[in-house]
Image 1 (cartoon, rainbow, N blue to C red):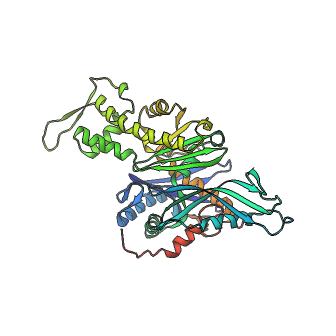
Image 2 (tube, one colour):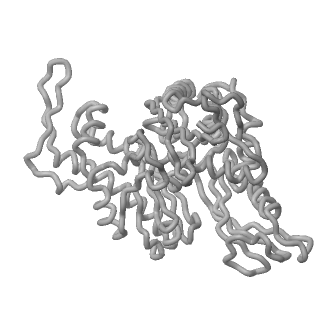
Image 3 (cartoon, rainbow, N blue to C red):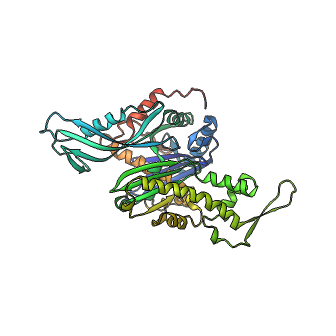
Length: 435
């Protein structure tokens, strides 16, 4: 392995699973997945850490599995954040420059973003991402990159994403206790979008819907700019719970039924199709109608998609989203979900697989929608490396054969979350009481 080749790790702390993915970028710019680890998520509820010791153990299991497979020592990771506490808002920032003769520089933009990071938020909330949508120079609007222009008044429209201070702090605490450092904390639908959307789709207008176990995350792009984000506070787990209650079976049996026999369209199952569930402790087996099973699933998935459609209309650019909807995440593997989404929204829909930016790999499982967020976190890690390399070379993991570890966990993070990470690490005490 090339000693100068960067290796990046992504950590997806989800409600049902924790996944760690390790990758490197090849000469063609594709991501080559070197290792993947997965563990059952025991301490996370609806995307939020609810039990720190259990979450730490799950992180260690996934991390060690990925590290062993890749033959690397993982030191720093890009971590996803999600949950119903996530909020988004629009904001216009403004900076008056001293001289028209001096060209607008990256420093001017960074100052504008830093000022936006310092906005006063409701108690208990902090800004996670400040995402520039467009710049305005001396009232000239629609500028994507003002660097090099002349002007006195520099303004920007920002999409701001915020979350609970405690949620971010607990994620950092878990990662640190697992023996890792956090490079960036990234909103999970932004990572998933990086993995499954093409530049053409983002330009044309597209809705990314990431259906996880605890939440359904939405990111809407148009003109290659993030326009709207939202979190729906339920996902695949609530479907499993509906099946458990509706069929009177164990939760593990309900999950198995959903994944193996479930459908988002009840009409696709015949009336006489049944599956037999073993009884408990000598009790008679139980027959479950697949039509009944799919009716339970369809009812809840209709509710989720209707919530998604509400957010699409709420974005104000519904008619501009000509690339339609891309479904990803574990919930997107449900049979006939694509057709149900098209029926409810009237928009073209496809399933998003994180293979567009991946090189050929022996680890076939990583191309599943289930790992879209993890792959996206690795890709975001390379974006961070590229930004940081404008200042100085860096890396974030060390291959077992490497003699001199490289580190890219320090340095300016550009437009993403630098002030939040620094504030979080300052107040973070790994010995704080557990949740």
